[in-house]
Length: 464
Ligand code: PLZ
Image (cartoon, rainbow, N blue to C red; front, side, top):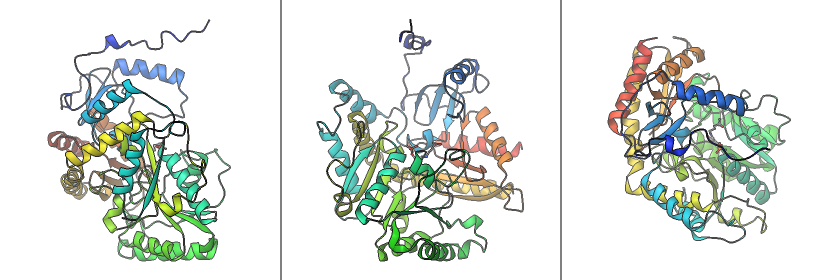
């Protein structure tokens, strides 16, 4: 008979219980085995036998603890974390306020379903988001489970409120893996390949990608906006467009920072044509870019903002925040879900907001950018394989090309990543061409680890 017993071959008492995660974890890089080590390789074999290969792994070290700027694995290696679980643990893993609030909540109740019997923390998160997202207009927020679900719901609201169907997105966009958000996403492999047919009424426009703009970065904002607007008007019809959806800095697409002026021009066009402007701040939100929200950099005030990732210190939570008159248009019961705004996740979000404020993490993100960007630019001077350095705050990247060209160099990118991982620096890639190294350290990463991480990266380029 099948039984649910023996779920773990690694019972908790096997672990070193003296040390938990969180900022008390020794803030040091420590490489004591090959990466991955023998214990992680064993677990990887189990993963391969139990989980489909479609669920990939960037660095197959199995984590036992994490906090501050490090991730500790099952073999006792302590890695410097330049990934934050893809921009999620901005306040750090097992951040003290998150642990405390979640611990209290888990003992009180774990779930009621907000649509069945509500609780205060959900409302408090929504009040906070209404207050802190860009614009001082009247807003409403509702909570869901993932970034993709937030984007789907933002489109639902925009369509309902406008009575229009078309959704405009951009080249290099990433918005998720569900049917609609996969359709909204630009890149075929790995996200869309053989998963069609896709959702209708999605139209893709050029993005103001300065490094790759054919006539050069100076002309990029104006020309890209003119092209996008012309295409919307001629190919879709502005009056058919429910929403224009954009990432203020593109995430998976390669940390593309739209040329200054592009987004304000698009925002103006939307305002003039009754189109709902949706900012996908799932990756950029919550202090990551040196602003609470990346839209603030150019003073963009979107009609709807989607957030997730950094919102709750790793607990699954996402939000849709929008103009009250749009959001309240949807009929009662038209929005929701079983788990959306789970009480543990809401407590975590309140703790994250307290931490960002109390620990000055917006300022800290800016400071991280001030440390990283000059070092990355100096590295690019020495290594012509680095064609572009970009980003804001603690969301920075380098794009690798064949020297003297703009031809993407994914192979060298993979080689640099491999060397960084072997040295105990966790880095991630991104980009339509797989040739972007991106850096997303937790905002609480101590200076000495930031510095050491950059030195490892520099060493990886010298060793090429
Ligand atoms: N919008 C801007 O960055 C998630 C994807 C990881 P979910 N990015 C990480 C992967 O390969 O699946 C993301 C994003 C932006 C939406 C999403 C989707 O958020 O919480 O992963 O659904």
